[in-house]
Amino acid sequence: PAPRDLPGRPAATLGLRAAWGGARRVLLRGRSRARPWQPPGPGALAMAARWCPTGRGDGSHFSDAELKKLGGARAQSSKARHAAWGTASAPTKPADFAVKKPYYDRRIALFEEYFAREQAKKEAARGAPVPITITLPDGGTKEGVAGVTTPADVAFGISKGLGKSAVVAKVNGEMWDLGRPMTEDSKLFIYTFKDPEGKECYWHSSAHVLGQALEREFGVDLTIGPALEEGFYYDCFVEDKHFTDDDKGKLKKVVEGIINEKQEFQRVEVSREEALEMFRENPFKVEIIEGLPEGSIISLYRNGPFCDLCHGPHIPTTGAIKSVSITSSARAHWRGDVDNAPLMRVYGITFPDKKLLR
Image (cartoon, rainbow, N blue to C red; front, side):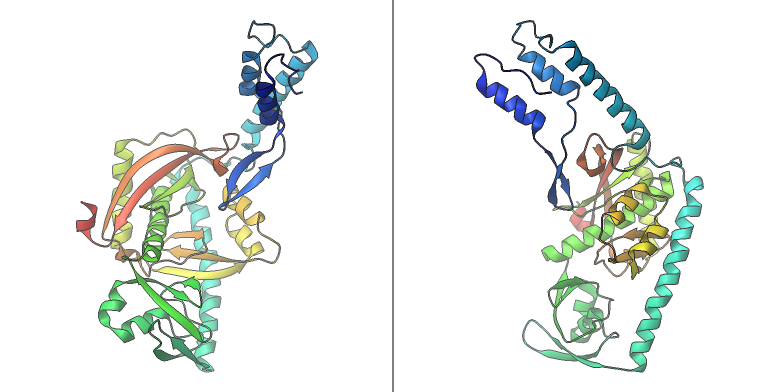
């Protein structure tokens, strides 16, 4: 129910009605999505009471029936959140690496199956070579083979220095892994960490390293892990745990171990159904996948024992990361909505040169 007219305060009445009756907006994949009207909660009732025409400020201008309806709506909403945490159901297994390890291992087994399929395509392309022309920014051209030649091949062909410093490429306007074969005549750009495109790729890849560390150390359920203007973060569901300085130290140690392993980033494409099968134990990933259209082709990335949904691209190996700092942590909520599951957001930053971290 909307508040009754408040004499002498038309602007306040209008604003309150708009706050109650309007659709809320939440951020979803970089775009806003309208959410349907929800019954007003305790905050809305308190706001209405503040403008109470009786002067008592206790909300007594509501009828008994209205107050009962509001109370019932709040109780029902609270019960639903505890059962399902809003949009995504709460994970059913505790945040414990030993408990989650069979799920993590199963993801990798499926990934290896899909990766073998990708490798078979590459070998077939080698057996029936189709020549392509690769055009560089200066107008020069290089010859290649469709499904075989990669941006890394071209970079090292230009110079050893460029090959070593290259982070990511752009092929025909699409951001592209250095190790991913080009499939047709291509206009190629190659970026290093000095370029904004290089930094974004580098820090997004670093978020995957942090995600692996969070799974290894705490058995979390991961949600999203984007690059920022400076650094990156990963959101995770870890029940009621609060991260301490000791936890940050542990995470840094695990991240440094992953870096030293020089894990290769591998990419595969799967169907929507295959992705759902792979991530079925993580309700947050399931919700993301179910939000994609039927028939979607979804890319996955693996590094070491870690696999994630991701559009990419990524750096060639974790060995490209030379320095790391786990900077802070904060509370967050799934989809940025306080009605959804509470999450822990862990921030970090990495560089290809130890001097840059100082």
